[in-house]
Image (tube, rainbow, N blue to C red; front, side):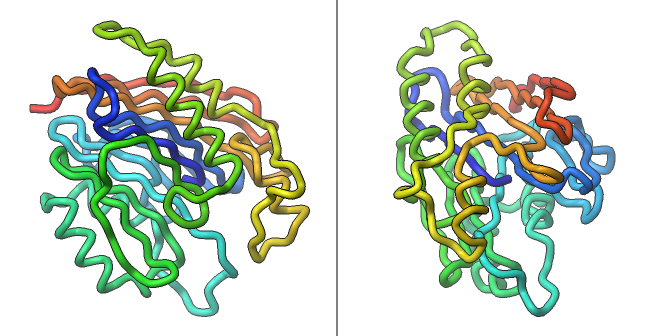
Length: 259
């Protein structure tokens, strides 16, 4: 997962709203949104290479997790899969804070990551860069990409602002239209040269990666996701998947109700 905007305790009807894009090499084997075969209570896509995930929730109890990578040079020594953080949190029974503290201690075992952990009571942001730490997130609308939490990266700011606007337009008491949320994730506008983030991949590559939706040879946005969790414990998880050309390849949604 490479770009996330989320609203925590920021809408009268929804406790948590998450919209996100997963960017990945198209050759990496992936399963689309569905109940996990080895854990049917979990909804989400699946990385078939390492067995982890990027965005997942428990369908029968309040729990959600999402991860992005932090852009940095490839590690010189093998690291644990960041997708395993998603798998472990969503299948274990512990709360967000205890999981975050345990993995703060073990943070150096992973390549750079940003992690969102929600247990129905608390939303926690965790990272292991530049040093492992975690914090409880206060109510509001935020964005995460491949740098620090809520950074001034153009695509993160654009998506976060778009989510803020769409939240104000959501009618009370009725199901919101998903198309505007997916349209925000489909934005291919690249950042102006003066605003392109500077990381180790170089200016031209960084400019190509500066849009919300990425379409490059062999690499790009593989899936766009929308998660709506109502204050009544009912919700919707919707996903659109894309082929190597960036064309829509599939669409699926799952409803759930926490007990």
